[in-house]
Amino acid sequence: MTDRKVRVRFAPSPTGALHIGGVRTALYNYLFARQHGGELVFRIEDTDSHRFVPGAEEYILESFKWLGIQFDEGVSFGGEHGPYRQSERRDIYKKYVQQLLDNGKAYIAFDTPEELEAKRAEIQNFQYDAHTRMQMRNSLTLSKEEVDQLIADGKQYTVRFKIEPGQEIHVNDMIRGDVKVMSDILDDKVLYKSADELPTYHLANIVDDHLMEVTHVIRGEEWLPSAPLHVLLYRAGVRWGLKWGDRIVVPPCYRNICIPVGGYCAFEGNACQWGVMALDGKVVVEARYQKVEIEKDGTVHLTIIPGKVKTIKL
Image (cartoon, rainbow, N blue to C red; front, side, top):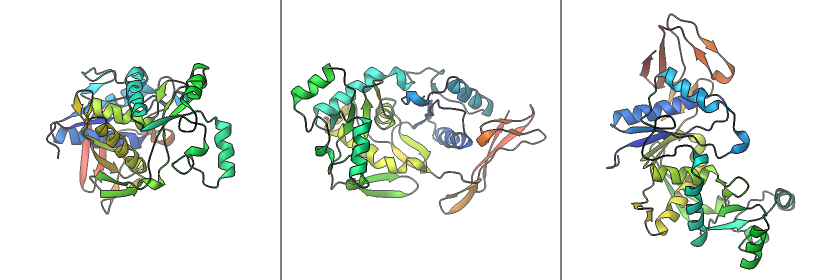
């Protein structure tokens, strides 16, 4: 455990109704925070403007209110680390994007979707990385004058993280232990898009977790492949002078939990069942288990690990 006060977050994207897998992840965070006398933050990660669904944020909040999972700060709850919607934090992200550029940890890329598609057709299993970046149209291959002119002309661009090969990356996962990955297999991920002046998830969640003082990241195992990139971003933060703003950069502890499949999942070598069940009541299940209705006096049971049941009274 960390000496810092435990702070965890649940950060859904407003791209539709809340799925039971999201409820399960939020429950892990909620119980972990309560067990350690910590705080649970509710953040909205809405940087993917193309997938935004009107009303989704309200639906998610109402779902958690119905479930009885209480947040300590965040969207609609207030707090000292806001704003809590990523679309309202553009100026914050721009500062860190510029720091990455100024320190040679990132570069500007002007490649169009058509140019990228052509390169994929030309090179089998193409990825934008140390082996291919010098073949592309970016600030590493163009002069400063050319880059400045393209930006002045309003050409859209992205900012990519510059990943150098040959680095051994260690992810401290509280379930899997020390996960080792070589940087050679990683591509230069897009961190920022000029089209909507928003970062991608990878940069936004690192900056937000740091500024919101998140100590533990508990999320689905589908994010484990992204963890090495996030560790490298934290390393980049350390190399900026050991601080982002006025606080030392300290990466959170990661806990990438298993994904429920067919009602079961492998968790620390055992089978764990999840579900929502009504007692003395009616259950209505909609598409992908996105909505459950239980009679007023019903009880919700969420089985989160073998033999452990979380009961929430409505």
